[in-house]
Image (cartoon, rainbow, N blue to C red; front, top):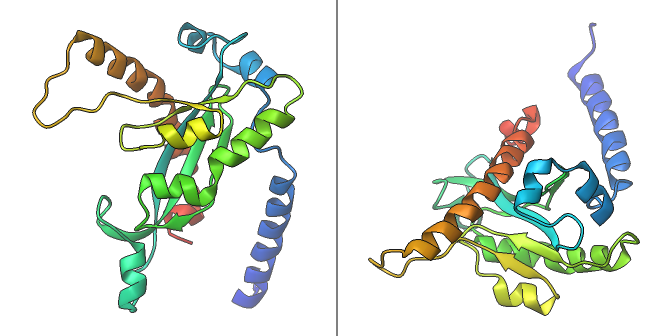
Length: 206
């Protein structure tokens, strides 16, 4: 349309500002009643939708960033797992498909520090206490890389994770079945993470 880059950027920033303003008005999570009502019936084979806890699936993903020239900044942003400079984004998913994006942290942060720095467990406790449909606490479903059991218990919440092996230890039947059951549930979170990364801006580290 013959617009200059400056005019186009102003239009884009105005649109993003409106979207952020609208997003701030959304609730953090779906209520207990909404989550139970709108989830697929297949989830009810794993979780009780009437008297059970509030299942919430947690995971992290990377947002690619350019390599900074500063050595200190490079160390803060570089992530060994992804082998790149990036920001780490937390993704929390409810069974009704409500997806919540946690604030970004530096790529050097591990999963446990990311949970602590974003104070997500404290925020979940406040949300559950304010939910008029139920005061049930959250059941955090983590990958085995997290070590947040005690932290969750401090805030009246529970954790569900696959079992960890010690060295060359081989799992018995109970541990295999328990880990497999968690893996089946966590498959839903992988799809949520991929959905979050479909954004044109996020894929390009903008």
